[in-house]
Image (cartoon, rainbow, N blue to C red; front, top):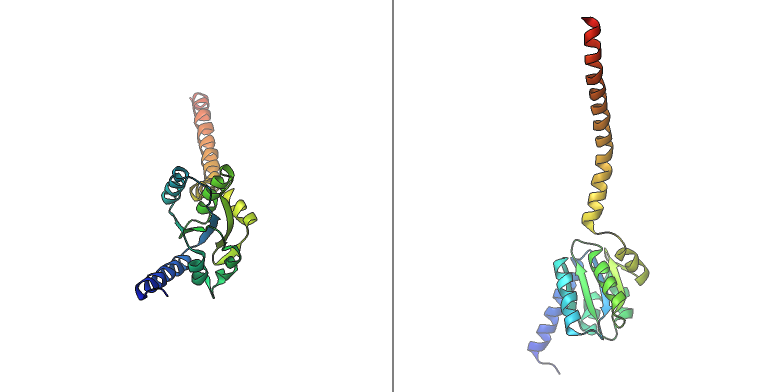
Length: 175
């Protein structure tokens, strides 16, 4: 029988994990076995720089955290070693980084994930991983908005330049 202190600590871990999952827009669950400390440290650093929270969790505690929620479908993959990466505001960062890492490390495996409280499969995670980063997407949208304005400005400038060239030719004819 666990002591009251240990039981309270575990309840707090479950409560914190539940809150983290509720505040996340996306998350990925992975099987991290077989990676060395150097690779794990590099992975954690890259995830932290992208604003992704990555932790190793006990399957039982994660199972308790998702019980009765929309994420209860994740329960089927909770066996073996489990780590979870969640992001509060970037939908693709965790998927992109972990998918890239899984491609270069044969024992590292993506189990499942979620977006906006909806459980998604490995295929969708792989598709998310192929999307460009948020900054690149915003730059593309800005470029699309800016293109018609730039074309209009070039057309006006061409008219002004054409009129500027025509004006000196007309001036001697009037004199």
